[in-house]
Length: 280
Image (cartoon, rainbow, N blue to C red; front, side, top):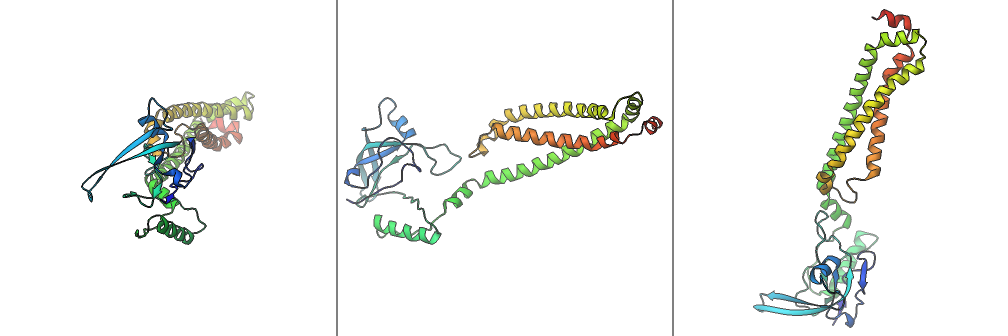
């Protein structure tokens, strides 16, 4: 009986217990189970050394057939079909040349080019299942892009509207502080006439900006943390409450707010007390 390994350990499927297939007759009637499968099928007993029983119904025979396999290893859970779905319990068996129904076969081929991958695929297919029709070779990167296309589109739209909101908030802050400084021109003129330095006046304006900025960042941070459950299903590879992302967003908002408040402050730096008093 000719056997073939169906996966490569350890970096694709981390081995948690037991051993991998050794591609020999020793693999006959053996299987490797995923971690979730081991917990589901053997909740109160160790999976290693246990026996699994499989029933298959064949239309050709008109009846059901039974086969057994001995668990020789436990591997970590992996996502095989969809990145959005949680890992499903999986039982891995070696592919034998005399199997009645090997089922759907997926090959993971590492090659320098697509041509090399196609050649390796056809050779492996001829060795394992002679006479099987060829199918198109799909790049892993393409499968990943297809699986996350919705998330990438939503991320692009979210990034665009977030940038637009950031721009509008900067313009709004600039208009708010510009109007506030214009309304307080006489006050600043009196302060300067009574001996206040221009630097102290600038700090007075910036204190107001920092207070508004702090309130906005705290309120936005709380809202972001509370909304993590809503966006968790659209993320892959990152967590919804990543502290570095939240800190980076807060820092960016600080830069925008300070920039929007410093531009109108130039009026205070070049303010003439006499002209400020006449402005009333």
